[in-house]
Amino acid sequence: MTSAELIEISESRSAHNYHPLPVVIHEAHGAWVTDVEGKRYLDCLSGYSSLNFGHGHPKIIEAARDQLERLTLTSRAFYHDQFARFCAGLGDLTGKDMILPMNTGAEAVETAIKVARKWGYQVKGVEPDQANIIVMENNFHGRTTTIISFSTDPDAHDDFGPYTPGFRIVPYGSAEAVRQAVDADTVAVLVEPIQGEAGVLVPPEGYLTELRRLCSDGGILMIADEIQSGLGRTGQTFACDVEGVVPDIYVLGKALGGGVVPVSAIAADRDVLGVIHPGQHGSTFGGNPLACAVGIAVVELLNTGEFQARAAKLGESLHSRLRGLLGRGVTEIRGRGLWAGVDIDPSLATGREVSKALLKRGVLVKDTHGSTIRLAPPIVVSEDDLIWAIDQLADAIHAMKEQ
Ligand SMILES: *Cc1c(COP(=O)(O)O)cnc(C)c1O
Image (cartoon, rainbow, N blue to C red):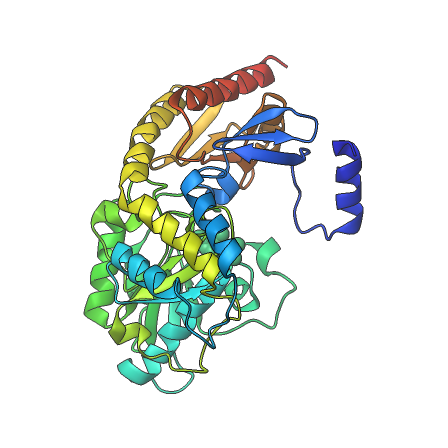
């Protein structure tokens, strides 16, 4: 079938909860994907940072293939031989005592919320049902009913009530706003160290440090949603590392599954995660052997430090090249490491129009909101390919100015 036919069937037979760009991908290796007609594109989205190690990384595929042929699912009713290594390995990577594995990012966020509430009642001594969690404007933490209850994006939030109570929304980037929202029943502050979906918003320097201090002083758990920002993307293992901040709970997902299977987890010390006992939380597929084997391979790749160093180095080229576009159709650039939010002059084009123009030129990107596009190529991308992609962006914007 042609891509036009496949798109037509996809649109008529699936819910319209996404608005994909008109490309039908058939195959991918490293940073490059090929569509059903054989046209190649440089992937500058990486499955929203799920493909930090590229498509089909040999170490990840080997781990998955070995595991696929031996054992894929046991449920947590039994132990399996990949579980211990995954939890110990990810625990060491995060510096935390314990792991609670789930599948999707939203499930890991839900897990962190449940753990924080239980910790609040059992350890902090909050009165039943009084716990509150402070969250940020323009957050993105997933799509479950509880999580969208505290979304400030009308598309994500509206018409899905009644909403889960217990969340206080404050502006992102202001530790003072958090300080004012805190009371004796505050059990956690939930924050993205860089807000990805909001347009790759980097908070002011010192913000994470101040949140850390505020949480430590107030007996409040700091929960860092590193699902998109973590695991090498910013040039560090975690985006919190930039300020040397260690949250009480890391929330991980996306790249933890190596682009192969959904793998998510929270990592925390025993005094926090120890509040969960049998029957109180779980998932049929969470921590399954295939997921753990892939997760172990991902942790091993990160333990080499190569990906973090490469994201930092390529990130310098990315950002310095992008800065050259400022004032030439680009109004602002944000980000860290191999991750950038690029605001296009809205009088020129929407983010979607730019994404479509780049698609024609063989570059896959995705708009976030309005006139912002996000660049997050796989960390295995070559420097030449990266520069070529930015040149395509420059040419696409230039062509739009000519019109
Ligand atoms: C993608 C994402 C999630 C949700 O992950 P899913 O696997 O889509 O449920 C949560 N938080 C952040 C920061 C994300 O980027």
